[in-house]
Length: 430
Image 1: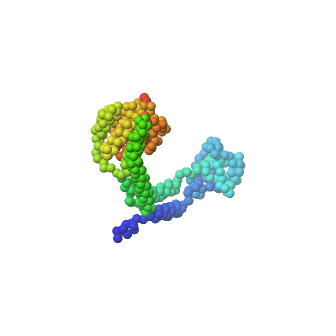
Image 2: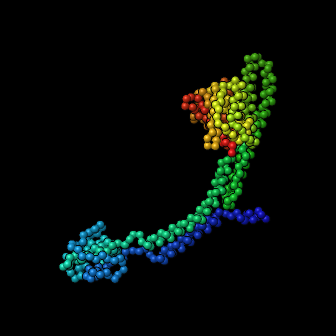
Image 3: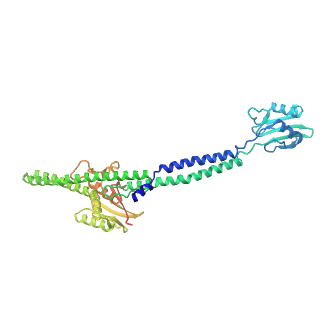
């Protein structure tokens, strides 16, 4: 019963979008109707020759619609201003209307309405020479931004505001679950706990979330099968290697030493492969780890073994994770520094809720173009496979897999004064 009610509550996002579009169309139509009903935009009405002649003859405003004319007397005839120009035809029509010679009138116009040559719009000026001076009538163009424009702009602004509220709500309904889904997908890691995918949102977003979660489960299962197969192969190789070690005891000393070295190298590769498989598979119990004590213990153990490694003291830092896995990270990085640089120096600092650990060496450094590739499985910094440098190419891959599982980051770079530096960043425990 509850599942049925839940399915009814989960609706498609298409319905709100359709309602929003229809509402936008209807509201826009209502606003346009209101604007149209309010009247067309105001225009400057044309003024005919008869109105202008009446204003010149009487000095009073004519009765036709339009802005008031400016009527005044001056000592000289009007002169063109801006786009105005002399128009002989308008002067002739005005002289006929006033029954005066054409030489006694001046007509300055901007334009005439199409099809009405005896009417004028915009700024114009007509003058009539009288015994008392020039009587002038000027017409001014109407304002470009009138009250009608103001009302129309306000109505359209209100329409946009009313439509933006449901549009913002629909956008939030869609983008919120998608953003949470993206964050959950970004947290997905091999060997890590499965992320919590969002359960809310419209039907389409829920279907996408289910598809992404199923895809994550399939990929995780595939990775587990691959890791199990790799571990099984590496484990099964131990038995024939033991038989080979027994039979080579019958070889001469020189050949026996070379064969024993090869078997030891293969056993080391098998051990690293099994370790890599274990570190990629499954989730480990996380506890609070005091970083300084952990590093000091690793450095002390390796120093007892004869490694040239030193540790500089740093601030107190507590991280959450698997202490054995973290020891493996720093042991691999220190061993890598000693193998290629002869020495290893460690220091750490705390900033921005994270601990940053540096492992420096005095070796030849690394190729910057290969810095990321060195973290791939079975990739070595020394491509010659020289036994003097040892290694199987899994140490850095194991270190990165563990650090990523602890939500951290590890990288390799060259020091300015020579040598390489490995940087591990781990979030502090909250």
